Image (cartoon, rainbow, N blue to C red; front, side):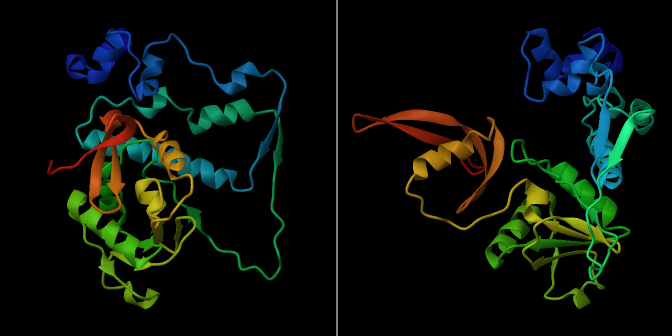
Length: 280
């Protein structure tokens, strides 16, 4: 805890610090483990003799990951969330990582390219949200603010219905209303746009970001479906969420997941989902 106090002078205002004091590891507490341990080790330090196999896209993925980590920290810090540990405590920097690989056998895996394929300079865009965590609208807003100044962003939705839901969520939470387009020729008048396009992965190409629903919110919107084992599927999906997670109800929009509670109804115990909406 001394390290925590040294880094964060206003530690008494930190909910995380108070929980650690009570010997409770809070959700997200693993982000502060470097402060409560004398030393953290890496996988490389457990291995004496090893070879390394690198993915064909390793360098690009590595650079993108480092960039996202630092952008996430900057967005937290500028949004006055000062109880957030600098990435240097949590991650290896590029120099340290390369030192671990030095003098090791390194195998670079390359995919076979068809001569008829057209090679493009595209970059995969990592998710801004995770299905296991609360949607960070500050980070999403910061992404649009920073990138829309120099590049164009097209939000690609899988259907008209999901497009309407995405627009509603963005408008209500970060006051953003993307311009609707039907084809690529309409992109020049605006920097933040939306369209109906079923996109498997988000990517950047020619200074244009093509962003799908999963990148924004951690999951894709899907239409209602009937399942024979509907109860099992619902509770299986709920296991992915933690208390106070922000969810999107199919009919009523954003809500908070409080818990799964048992209700006695007509002399029968029912497992029920407790959701909290803004107007309740």
